[in-house]
Image 1: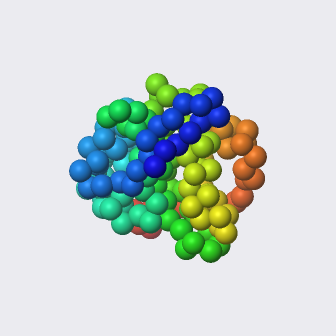
Image 2: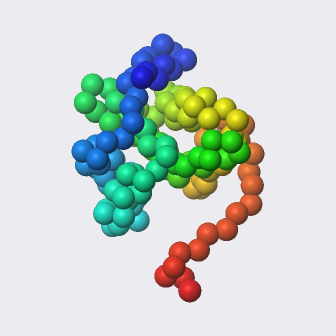
Length: 139
């Protein structure tokens, strides 16, 4: 499969395989996503059990990834979207979400944003919605 950007650049896109996890983990380390890094084995299991687990490559370099879940009819939930810092600003994240949405066109896309990614989603016409989160450690 291919991911084609509006500028004509083309990247290969494929489903996650277990042997890809080291690439994913390294990108999480580079981004400083400490929770995913510290819970490495849990993160790997999450990738292995996700209905959406796609990687974008340029040659053998991991450019971006997207992981999530879908019921195929109402909701597609994006758990993580990460573009390598060296590839940001090209439209890869936007095209990657669009690629996933075309796989499940009946669904809406739901996702969470950080304070640093909020502007990306607002610029791409995503509507804010209200939600809550709690981990088991917080009881």
